[in-house]
Image (cartoon, rainbow, N blue to C red):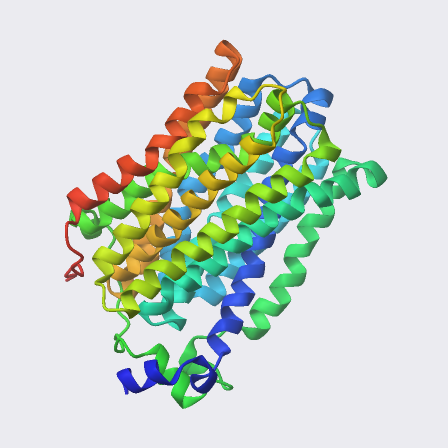
Length: 427
């Protein structure tokens, strides 16, 4: 059945799993619109509230601190309650938090709203990885996660467009209210549509066989502390610790970077941000497709994932030259940043498949939560470092150097910890 299902192709097997993937794609897109709004509005809010670079860094730090704790808690909830209920709780939390930004009247109000937002938004990727593990066989998981993470980039593309449309007409407070309300519209579809494969009525027997072609696992509870004894856990967690700071930097400082270094304004941000995030989408989907394609051609998951991550790491390196543009023609440097973001996303997609490659399905949410927590801790350190560098030194050179090197260092650590992929043996 396993070989037959793979050979028939999606046209015969069925496409319900791709509909589930699309649903999570839109959830991730909305998640990133809500997360990204403050970075796009940074010049506006900085002018109104008089934030220094350190003040802004502290606001981002508060988000990431809550995100770190939220990742652990939602990782547990996804394993204990399932993706449907766990994701619903996360969405309600971050939707309300986004709307709470509209009531902020002081810097500490923003920090409180970001704490709530960070906690709720931490549930997005543990839910996504859990759902992909339930709905896709191993050979399709990287592509599925690549499509889902593309939603993050579409959200980042749409955010400056929404801000440019909403803020001049209604102000920044209604903008936060509107993007918060969108979460609850999506939530109606999530609750109505999502079910595990065996509970999904319109799923054909052939597609169910395809989904379960790696075998069926008996559900069991997983103790978290024993997971820390496994090298596989630390390979994923250290990869997240090194990679996530680069993404946090691009997400929260890239609009301000374009304004301060390239001399752009809010109305001009849409095009360069759209270019970089479209390239990021291509990198994420391409990175997921490449490793999945190599596995289908007979490469081991170990070699396919690492070869793809190496290629992606090399795409990030040239970004060290991005800060030298000044107010000269900036378009080539936008493409350079886009290439780096594409490489990052291709690497990240393959990194997110490691829990399902290296652990039984029952532990995927927990391991993803542990890794996400370390990733958020790395992001917190990057926020403080970025704020200090900009406040004291006034340039981005060292910041981009750190962002460029993290991927190769992360891949080296992953390889040293897990030279060959072997599934961890859990008690």
